[in-house]
Length: 172
Image (cartoon, rainbow, N blue to C red; front, side, top):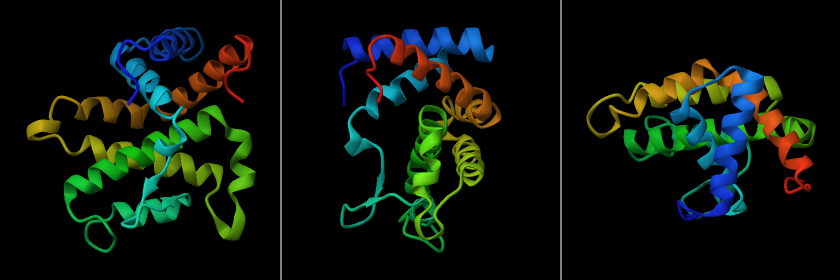
């Protein structure tokens, strides 16, 4: 994990808050902080993917969804389902917002389309928002907003990428 006071984290927080305000009309500090933290953590490529039991990264969206299923899939508990669904939402938001042009590259052997990625990302955040008891009670509404505002968050990330590109091409 990148430290809280790291300049990269601070940069992402500022750029996300500014772009979301200007381009998406989102003035939600909790949401923009979450997205800034997401971008920071995803700078380490090891953090991009859900991993299977052997530690192999799951790069196909459908495999990730199976990994999240506690009844018919690989998730050992509902807590694990929540964790994996949160990651799926994060991954889908990151991929569709920062790198939508790569969606065509992911379509080997029937893998996910852009529309499917958006739908699954929204659905995953919605599922996470339904874990609204005990230790998850306080953050559940954030994931409901991420689900409801998914497209606006994607649009804001498009502008975040443009801003970062203007700063010297840090995102390539």
